[in-house]
Length: 329
Ligand SMILES: [Fe+2]
Ligand SMILES: [Fe+2]
Image (cartoon, rainbow, N blue to C red):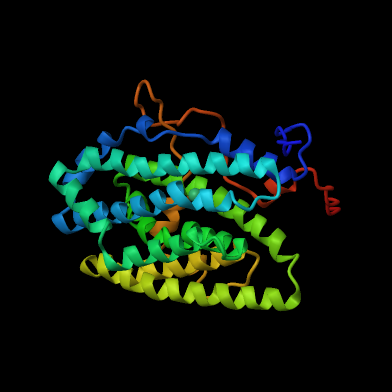
């Protein structure tokens, strides 16, 4: 008899978090083409050459990282799933990574000339520190002998930390009431990454908790070493991009703050002393502004209308779990 092949049954879901994540991700689905980026052209023309260079190259770097995720990151994670529903969630994530990677091209085609766009892609395909982070993560993804839990670590480090040196720029402008539509795309990406990082971190913790004490210790040593290596490279990348505008130290604080969040997604302790209070309030302000939805047809910027969405809360993951008794008041 040939090996049997099982149909996915969504009426027999063994991990309620798979279903909750699927629902969350599908209700916050979005497309870059529905954001009126050209409304930012007046703001764009007020930026000098140095700041325009920064915006273009920051997005070049982000394009490379989202390309890696869409082409190899999720495919690597799909090799080691616990449930068929996890595969479905990873399929959704993989498609959205393609949307993310494409959305920067939508921004480029609006703000940049064809020559500038070519130069940005030449830069992102060759810049040393950017290529370092992409290739170190890719080496783990494509290694068929590596512990699959390490692929989840690489994924969460990339998405919850390494993107943030790039995200800083549009969030800074948003906090200063500039480039609001460009920033809206970034905020939609951030909203996705927040769910991806939490979900993949959760799946990591399920596997980590099954390891022996010794295996946990060696996994912990490995992941902190890897974070140090990535951070040391991120410092150089950040200097390269931001020294010319004088934002480097603020960006690195933001990167360390997000490195801690990545470690927390994996159920590990924070590595750096930086907290939310240390991050430039203009950038935190940019993050906290709720997404300004855009009406596709009138292009009046008040509402990306495809399902009602809200920010993730911790208890979004309590689906199916027994409710904790409410404290008596
Ligand atoms: Fe992404
Ligand atoms: Fe992602």
